[in-house]
Length: 401
Image 1 (cartoon, helix red, strand yellow):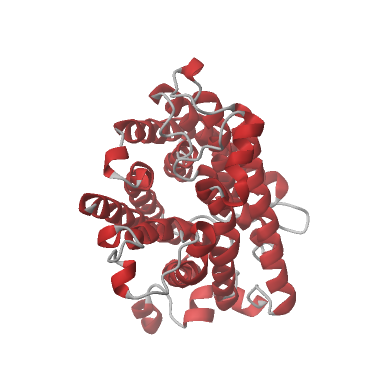
Image 2 (image 1 turned 90 degrees about the horizontal axis):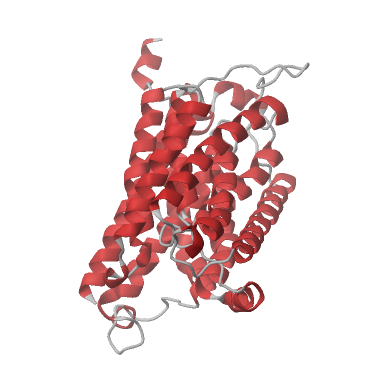
């Protein structure tokens, strides 16, 4: 058991490091006036997520609570697995749960109030996210039994294309719509006003940190050392580079698209990384990279949806596509391991998207009509860094000014 404890602990640490990637990806993409806010949001959202998941969310998803003595929860007496395995499993799955508000953070950047977002994080990680997590990964409500009887296979999501990423992206859609666009993003006659990223270097660093940590996210989703397979690592790698290359071509050398293309491929491969052939993983990543570029441009140029980091495109749509493509490239007829059906993947993905979309609109809608979720026009003009945290990312320069 000790080797399993160490294995999943290393996975938890790798996924915890991914949250630094979320932070720097946002820091590089937002305007300079919101860089400090991006860093603080990711840290405090993680803290709030931990509390919500420890006291409510993990129990809702898996029926396990930790309101017993340290001796018992660490494995003495046979109620819990030995050597504190349940505790590191909680830590590992917490890092997944906390990815949801980290995803949302990028969509609502630059104009969201700070404490209402913390309240949203508490509610989402305590109730909305673990509802579908428990259905997909613990057969809550008999969901997987129903899927198997009705569609010939259980809904398969090995590492969370839908459970984590699509959930985060579709919740974020509700938040972005409820918040509205940044002031001045479009003119009265519908022309886009450029609001370029503040720092491509930070953006790239964030993408690299996420990409490296993702191999803990995917490979260590096996949760037991004896269940590890190199297929997951190879498929994650092929999907990542597929996303990069397709985003390079479709995005016409844009560095933001290229670095996010890697993430699009990794988002999409999570679901089927343990059942696809590497060529199927490459195709999945390539599709996701192109989808991200197309959907991001659609949001910004046609829909006028001010999703700052494109999280609905990257996580919401690419995550959903990964769940569905698992039902294609996971089939034995296409070189996969089998055990999946297209119908099960389509329906399971739709259920996850529906729960996330409704949950996002309900949570952010309630907060909007009760305490408000948007900065005042004056604070937004000043910038979230100074308005909320009373300091910018370059305080020395501010003093000299």
